[in-house]
Length: 316
Ligand SMILES: NC(=O)c1ccc[n+]([C@@H]2O[C@H](COP(=O)([O-])OP(=O)(O)OC[C@H]3O[C@@H](n4cnc5c(N)ncnc54)[C@H](OP(=O)(O)O)[C@@H]3O)[C@@H](O)[C@H]2O)c1
Image (cartoon, rainbow, N blue to C red; front, top):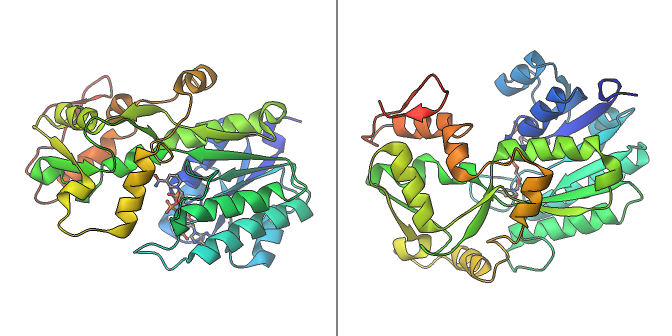
C-alpha cells in the first residue's frame, strides 16, 4: 500500500499546525481528511481546493470524530489554545478534547496517532494552559494505540505580529536580550509530522522536542532590523510592561530555567530533518508574507518589501 491509498485525519486543519500538516501530507501523497466545524468557511474551501476531503465535526462531538476516524490510517491531534484571553476553550475542554481523540482513535483501530503537545510538557509548570499538555500526553500514552508525541518549540510566527512593536521600532518577547530561546516555523511542524507518518517504524513510541533555530532577544532585533531596513531594538517583555503580570512572570521563569527556552538537540534534528528553517531563512521564505502584512498594517511607517526574482524579500 502506498501513501496514496491511506488517509490521515487532520484536526485543526483550518489553523496553523493542522494546516501545515495537511499541506505536507498532501505533498507526500497521503489522502487527507480534515475535520472542520464549518465546511463552507473560507479556510475549509481552500483545503478542499487543495485536494483535502473536509468533513463536518467538532472536538466536543465524539460521534463526529468516530465518523471521521472510521477507516483512517492515521490521526493528527492538536487542540485549540485554552484558558487564555480570546478563547472560550477552557483548560478542562482541552484535556477532554485530547483524551477523546486518543480514545476514539484507539476504538476505530487507527494505526498511528500523532499528538502535538508543547515544549514545556514533561514536568509540571504551574501554568494551567501549559500543563494541559502533560495531562493529554498521559491520556495518549494510556491508550493501546501506536503513537508519537511531538513537542514543538514556540512558533516563529509569534515574533512577527502586529502587536510586537515593529511600528515603534522596538520589540519585546520572553527571553532576555542575551538569552537564547528555541523557535520553530509552523511550516516545519507539518513537514516533520509527514515524515513521522511516513516512517512509523522509526517514530512510533517516541516523544520528540522539535525546533528549527535559536534566537537571543538581540539576535531577533538584528534579524528584524535587516529584514525591515529600519533600526529595531529589543527588551524583555516584563521590562516593558508597566504592571506585573503573574502568568508572564511564570513564563519568563520557565525561559530562565530552560523549560520554555527549549532543549532540543538542533544538530541532531537538522541531520534528521534537513529542511528545518532558522529564523533568518524563515523571514526570507514562509515568513516574508507575514512580515509584509505587518509592515502594511496602519501606523508602522515602514515600507513593505518587494520580492526579488529569487523569491527573497528585498528593500523597495
Ligand atoms: N503558539 C506557540 O508558540 C505554540 C507552541 C507549541 C504548542 N502550541 C499549541 O498549539 C495549539 C494551537 O495550535 P494552532 O496554533 O495550530 O491552532 P490555531 O491556529 O489557533 O487553530 C485552532 C484550530 O482548532 C480548530 N478548533 C477550535 N475549536 C474546535 C472544536 N471545538 N472542534 C474542532 N476544531 C476546533 C479551529 O477550527 P475553526 O477554524 O473552526 O476555528 C482551528 O482549525 C495550542 O494547543 C497551543 O498550546 C502553541
